[in-house]
Amino acid sequence: MFYSAEQIAARVAELGAQIARDYAGQPVVLVCVLKGSFVFTADLCRAIDGNVRIEFLGVQSYGEGTETSGQVQITQDLTRPIEGEHVLLVEDIVDTGLTIAHLLDLFRTRKPASLKVCALLHKPSRTRIEVPIDYLGFTIEDKFVVGYGLDFAQRYRNLPFIGIVEHA
Ligand code: IMP
Image (cartoon, rainbow, N blue to C red):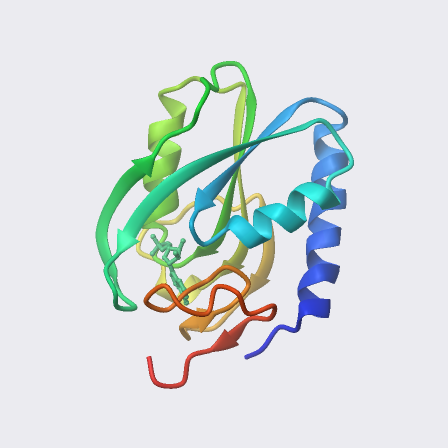
């Protein structure tokens, strides 16, 4: 499995256009879920021709390995309240679903006007909790992928493409 920088850019452009159409000029807060989605969010926000604000949320659910610890820890919170705002969570990958499920629960308590999820990648074979993904880049098989913001033990985030780690 391999997605080139060109393939990713084409899909991100489509997602951005779809998001711009759906929100139709209403202000939207893009919440970049760190660290993995910093590259995706940077490209996605520029693909949305609309009224966009960016927030960053630090989340840690992994150790140094490739398996989720099952525990989601907020390491850095938003800088402003989201009550009454249209919020779009931007995730690099939905794997077990535990992270997004946790974030949706947390964010609902803050009473946004709407709350949606945009994920670049989804591994449905690994699902432990079903979560709604309103905007999805690619569905992938059960392989550990890196690049375009995704890491293995903090490495490879800077690769411009998405590929598989052979010896993870
Ligand atoms: P979940 O809570 O199991 O859905 O995992 C979500 C998080 O795990 C993502 O935001 C990534 O940081 C990380 N993750 C899951 N699968 C991969 C992968 O294949 N490569 C890199 N990171 C991954």
